[in-house]
Image 1 (spheres, one colour):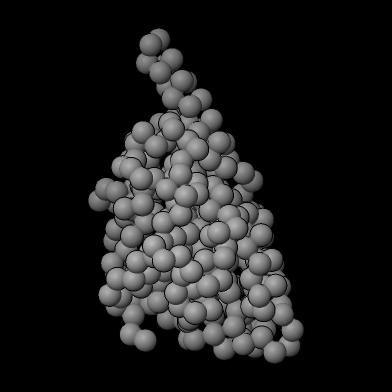
Image 2 (image 1 turned 180 degrees about the vertical axis):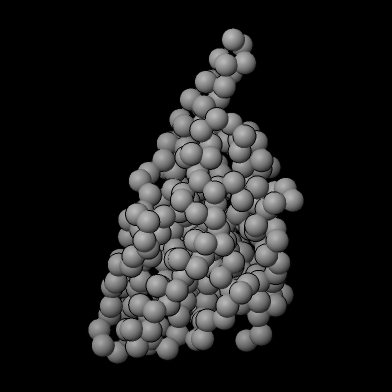
Length: 268
């Protein structure tokens, strides 16, 4: 009886934590689709947006609007993040974005990702190349996995809420992010340092954004790193974060003077 009560309590806490973190939103349908914004017939640079786990393309719409206003062609990809493995999702989500950018006539393709989206593009690039790939900005990516997954993956309801991909984002032997190795493209990381989810933060090293620690967002080979006072579920809608994304895509540097520029593996 006590064990049953603990399981029910744990499940309630899990659902509450996911809802407060903005993760218990509707997922996309079985087939990925793209929402297009074009800056005209002379688009030369296009940005592919890839949302995070248990989110939809609507979570990236503010960023899409900002990028479009700046003059980029924009492809906002929607994909069923809770229904398949990372390997399958990468092949489902990334190619439609590439094809849509090509259809605009874009010569240079950039990408901006949130959370799981960053792992999808790393997974895709581990097996494919993208001609004309420019810069990739990852917002709150679990590049070293997340201890939250380690702690909660066996809790009743976790796999139902987060799907196969959610089970692959831990820090153990079956971690997909840890198996992907260094990045060799122009990758910049924006990490959040504010948590609005104290329950999940209990499982994470400080500083963290309520889902991923700052340390976990880092990846070998990255070209830039920036920490912002923003939480995981809202980083892609934060005005400061959006302005930093625009700056990096345009100039290859962040606006903030606190940004780091480690020696990256990408050869300019």
